[in-house]
Image (cartoon, rainbow, N blue to C red; front, side, top):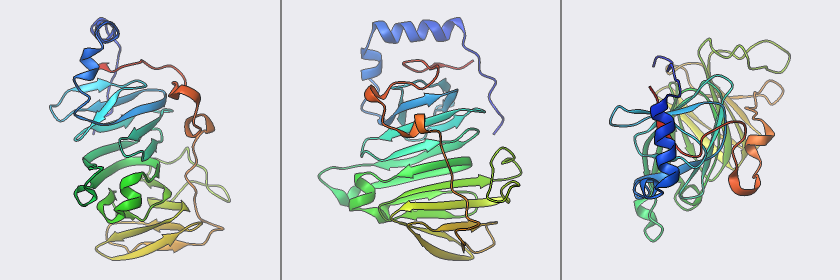
Length: 248
């Protein structure tokens, strides 16, 4: 997907002021929202299912079908309605393919997210704890299933030059994963592997099986502390709007 040339226009500012003056505009989307942006540093946009692109801010809602994109040097933290969280690294794209959370009917739960590029860290919410088999993260080389967990994932395709690895150099092309808590399954047509707390994995391509990587050479996907900590009030980190607006 081509990188967006985003600029805040008079229409964007007007839209923002309307949202401040008429809170009903935000409330009208509440039934559709499956989560919201709680922390943001830099530019974050959402390509909606109707083809419209919007520039998001802290408290902006996110919905099924949205493709979220962070720009260079941008980090965004999303909290979903089941209290699960995802933090996106710079130059990342994540699509919310599906998100169903039925508090009284766990059998109807289902979460499907697709990371097209970049990296993320994810922490399971209620769905992942009570119905983990219904949660999956798609990537270009493998599918990640969770079992109530906290994990990181980074997909490199000659675009991870700014990421450092143990011993120096840059990460190899492919999918890198690490598990902080719980366990994940990493699977593709070539094979599957289960990774537990403290373990690292790597998938070089869709035709190569996932493997466990020794901890000495494993890669942990790190994030700035100001994005990962629970700041009072869920305030923005860096500049950001309090609501979303159309990107021209």
